[in-house]
Length: 117
Ligand SMILES: [Zn+2]
Ligand SMILES: [Zn+2]
Image (cartoon, rainbow, N blue to C red; front, top):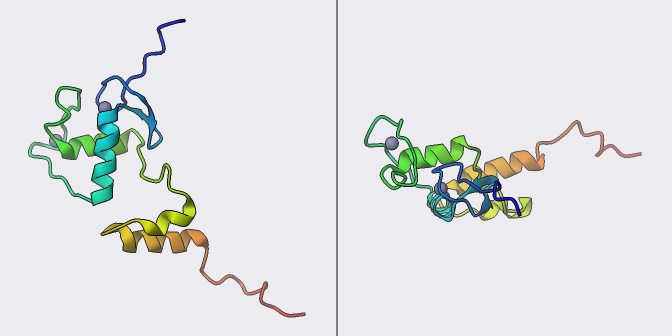
């Protein structure tokens, strides 16, 4: 078997375990991203919001780590079926429901489907 298939975490460069939230990442970044989005936390970078995220440094700045997660394409809707989007807890509930309503197309359409015979 060839050994050129080593998987690298797109966020920190550690050894990745597979696709998590649409992106190849390690277990650490997967857990970090999930915790971050489920709590709806807002991190603040103590430096210049330009930190380099590596395996060794990834714990030093959560703000830039989360930013990197998003930058490489991680998204929170990976395993949530559309019907469960309203189940998002906490602060994102309002935003989530508004988005879901928008997606569901509940805006009244032209009314042609209401027209009788
Ligand atoms: Zn990682
Ligand atoms: Zn930072």
